[in-house]
Image (tube, rainbow, N blue to C red):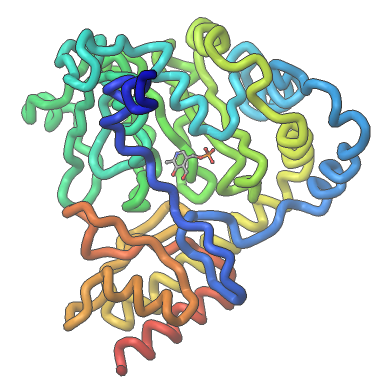
Length: 372
Ligand SMILES: Cc1ncc(COP(=O)(O)O)c(C=O)c1O
């Protein structure tokens, strides 16, 4: 008999899976580690989901999420053929790798040919390298400027490491984990210069000054990714989507699972679009808490990067404690934030914006740590 291990592809053996933020069930925990929205879905959404829970659960959902695509098309001024829905935006990101990138000839080795390349800035969303590795594609991680701003096309040309022909380029905009917003005019120049497919991952865009959706309708090689998880309080239901050229969308549609978006997720997302006023009020609350928290932490000596998202990247004041120590001390005080070990951000904490009361609790805890 073959050992189970020998039945697994070598590429899969060597994979490092994506590490999601923890979801501990600790009573009274203030959870500021996974950029979830502190406010619940609108009462209309809860009502719609509850009303859909009956004997119809035995039926398959609409395979193309037709109603949701129609509603989104209306919102974005395009047609349903410009939209594909996924089981969270993570799914459509993964579909893009499978549809547009050739796997390298030798699994894991990573050919440097442009058609095998997944390209992204570093640091940005840490799922992209995992998706590339899973597919056996090559990775091209191009460093951002030291202050996490975007490089101009001229700088990318001078730098020589950006592949303008890479099969697929991911740009997190506004960026994570820096929170840094990018101007649509700069993104437009980048899209114009880059010839492969460009995905503008706008997971946090509702908290930003600008969005780049128009680029997905202007350029045939640009896709914009959106999600209901962050701004629309719907992580649990897993709904995300791409907007882009019908030909790219049709290619992605061919390789997705037939019923990739669960029925209750479709119901919840449709109801969300019928109550956007509720969510827009929440964006304003979160942005105002973000600015207030940034000010308070800055007064305590933190270096807080300007954010256009629902989280901040903040460097604790120099002293005996490292950022990792801060993570642990805050955890002891039942406040969970996120810390990443890689060099560019290891001195920072990524803090999700919660309610004003949660932000105040964090500031109080930080004061206590500083005075202890
Ligand atoms: C930049 C970015 N894109 C996409 C996602 C995935 O969102 P979803 O819940 O829609 O899969 C996340 C989630 O953390 C993210 O940070």
